[in-house]
Length: 640
View 1: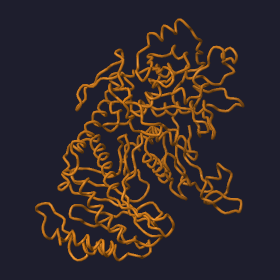
View 2: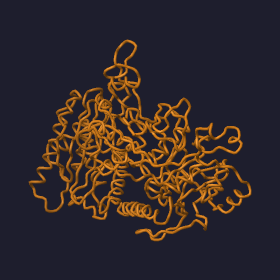
View 3: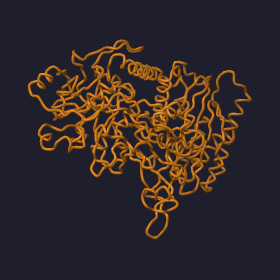
View 4: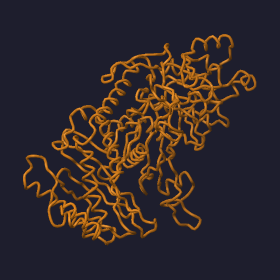
């Protein structure tokens, strides 16, 4: 009988623990080492594997807290180093954090995989996605009945990327090592350790994952090269937009529709219409890998996207707004590239606004309320849009995106009849239609607007694109003829937009003294001190919300809701924003929003983690989303 059959027989006949004793308990593990490694190194690696096996075996049926013995330990396998950074407190807590490192002498990823920032980011995306796929196949999570005493855990996981290619901490690649940051849900039944399942995680699943993902000879080098070249081309194209006077570029052959309203995957259908630029708007770029590509250029200035309902207007705008990120090959939007500062503006009823100068759009408020430093905890649709535009101008955004469906109508336009009914001196709102050209001509800020029912905007547009059955056409000349034939009255603003007021911001330490902000999807749970909470809510609790019986209740605390930020595409970005809030609080960071963003953007992504060691679940948000989050933080201290 072969050794492998003997091992399998031991496993099937005597249980999982017997299997691992047969495999690791009586002899050194015989993993192939690269040529040139000494017997001493081979024995040392085998010894460390045996040490890990023995340690886990000694923990079997003990209380969960005994797993803590693994904290900070390192185990050298034949082809990788396992580092245990932190151990979870129990089976229901966030999983343990581990890392694996492979020396490049063994991994042998070519320098082209990390020679530039774009290629390094793309490599991390590819390897993280591959690791997720491999681990999904290899994992054997404990599947109990769901009760307290049922088996739980047993899976190794990685922060899985989506369609957008973002800078992430899930892995690193350099000329010396390849490192992958993982989580390990350590197995237990209730609070009782299941050693056999833990041995399977660390001694079977992990080595196989390393073999399939972190050795260049094992990966699909063609697919990896494809994503490296694609991301490099997209970044190159984005850098060329301004030079050609463009806000965005949509490549011919792009697939813009998504599989569904809740999916980011491309629509796979025989009926899908591939994007094709109208001749009048077609431009070409030369890219380092793909060569010459052609498509529709969205020019700087004021661009309208019009057409009938359900003909692709919003689909086009959604592709443009996501074009601030690079996409994976096969997404359909690899050649949809947008100015990196382009910002979606929408109505957000109920949002928080703090000391924002909204006078260019809203002035002479009732009851003498100050519009130069406007604050509210419950904004209307129009005030939220006014504040969002001003906040975008403050951080040097150069393009704004609007969809009529998600805007406040009274902020977009005041038609001639309403002007006659309510005189300008009695209307505090200066609508966007009266400012949109001024934004472009005096601030250099372009606007792209989806307009389906407000023809007055034809008077202020530089370019008009009509969508019919997902096919664009340039109808600028026709739109101008209509505007001349059917004149409308657009009110002139009574004031100029004026210079941007730079505000200073800080986050009080009391926001994080009780507990660090915690990201939950696209929201951030906040845990302010009772003193800080009371300053806004009128409570006097020391640690949380004071309930009717006088006890502190840390639940039901405020959240920073970021779900309205359509260009925040990953929960990992939200985690980074939560960490930034914690960092600003703990380090008493103070300055203009622009200066703080410059400092944060210059920092390594790993350095933004608010805890000890490194984590693998952060992704870099744009400076725009960081600023938008700070502006929505009810406890931020903002001064103008």
